[in-house]
Length: 328
Image (cartoon, rainbow, N blue to C red):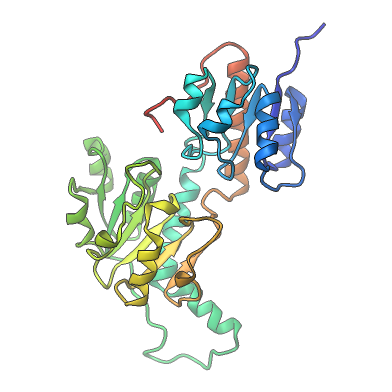
């Protein structure tokens, strides 16, 4: 008789190829409606699953983990960020938590660079004018944006994505600066021509563009507070493709309203999917619906990593992408 297949519960719809492979390997319970599971459904999932496969739309907190059955041994997150999972509570229960780092690095960096260009060159604003039938012809002083060549980019968080963005920015002729918990290795800094700032406040006030690429933690919540936003130059552009709660969104809306920033590009929001109304319908604000990893290749690779992590656990080995307390 063959060994019992692991009961794996997926909380959201994943790419077809990923779901099909999971059905082949495991006793996989799919969410074909692709709507977030209710609180009761999440409780039922952790009480029956050997492995839970959540996404950022699921809140896997200590209360939920406390209701898990003894059979739940793994939370294989579909995504790199794990701020929606209480890692400490899971660890205390002996539940392994994994994520999918690395596979969305280039795609998220592409999007961050796209937002820098879109805001600087007023691309979305211009496209909307054309779509509305309001384009009456070229004039020398109309719809003027700002070039990115020669501008100073301040990257907050110089991990995989921050470094990938730095490579793109360098190719566009930008001067790369960064703030991080510690400097990157010297050879990386030399490759990128990157200048390190230990003092975030000192860096912010000198940059033309600020890009947030830091993880969401208790320490980084409202990293850009009203006070810090006030330090930015009125000619600066702010980009966020990391996590929404890195910015005090109400303070950001006020800064835009009072013309304290030249432009903003956001792919994530503090109270996602809700967006602060003060950021809506602003010509110098480009808003995207969390598209950072939204490529066919990235989502497939994320699913492959989830499967690999589960298979590694199933064979009695330590999953490569295990997340421990203090590492999130």
